[in-house]
Length: 403
Image (cartoon, rainbow, N blue to C red):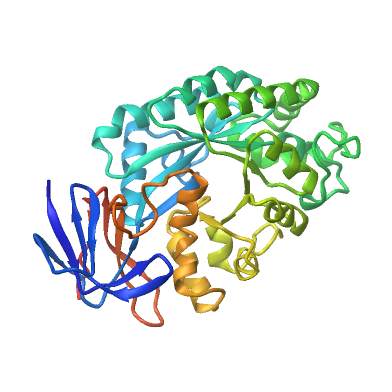
């Protein structure tokens, strides 16, 4: 049991920023603004903040498949991903493991192997690696794996994804304008239309299929449409019984949010239009946006701007999405653009995610909380960088700059 004190840092406390000492013992924060005790960590001129919590990150796929169709050894990929998380200040990560009907990178079997690797490698990993069951709702073959995962030592979250209907929407309908997927108003594209080939080309490439093979598979999967609502009900029931946090993904209608809220999904992940975001806020649901959106100053597919949503009070959580460094970069961009005060901005990557995932033991620098901490070098006018990450008081990463 190690007793140590961070001394001299500017500390992000709940609702305020102050220069205080923070003392850690047995993995928890035991004193704030007291005398230095035990081993002293000199943090003068640096920032000490709650470590980041990532509720949705799929950048691990780059380690699994660094080039299209080129798969890397799973253990090496997981270990490298873990080290990336630590060096980016992320102490708790929910890997968005896709359970889909496509072959290749995002099929059910590969997702199952990824989750088993996380379990097997846990003693060798430096941060807390968890799982988001990024379930494609047309992937009925995933139900047994979902049930297995909900009984695993890590409690996963469940994200209801429907990229199948998104792909099948009418050609004259923008992604952001599509109707609720089970509404009679949902416009369906003709699979024989030549425009479908262009729409699915990237997905086919990722899956290792020809365009024609992918369209044929999509046609077979689309025939399951009438069975999907019952499958969603079953997964939601399993999630409720397990106490798993549940999220809907890419909502475009208040009707969509209401449907998933009624099933127990109380978080809207990446709502695409204001109607969906307001529907979430009006019902007290949590709202999650992508940190790359905030860091870049807007959505790369023309959806809502995360920065605008933060400023409007319509964002509770920022997730790394497809790039781990985006979380810290988003904090810096939002701060530079004066979207909110710095304490509120930091909560989007710490306290907000903890609340979304029901992790009451972390996300703040407060007495009794788990000592998940990040030490930051943040010179005025420059990008912040991580000097150290602690998980439950244990040092997961330390870096020392050349200067």
